[in-house]
Image 1 (spheres, rainbow, N blue to C red):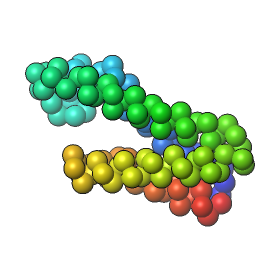
Image 2 (image 1 turned 90 degrees about the vertical axis):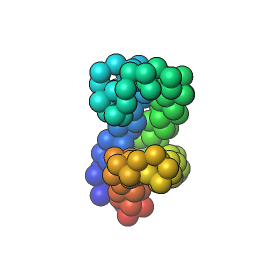
Image 3 (image 1 turned 60 degrees about the horizontal axis):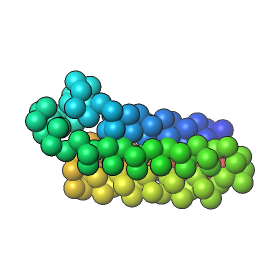
Image 4 (image 1 turned 120 degrees about the horizontal axis):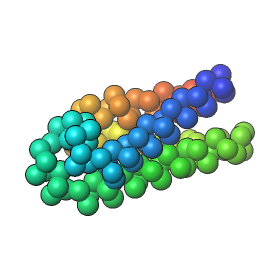
Length: 118
């Protein structure tokens, strides 16, 4: 069970690394425009805010990777960062897009549940 939990934690970390790339580097490029359903003008106007948001996603990914590298001693670190991802996903789903519930909050909740069961 611990192996499965760690695989899900790693997938959540990879997702957030991908979010970092989308928000920091591809926000006003075709991939970013498609991912977030924005016009070029909207993306250019919000590029600095998106980069800041991407940086926070990078911190979440780094925290999850850190927890994984600590082995069994990283349990608390993984729980903390998964909880942060879950709260961010719930907030994003409530305020920005319901899609965030499935893309961000659900994977974090599954990882957290598996981690707590392991």
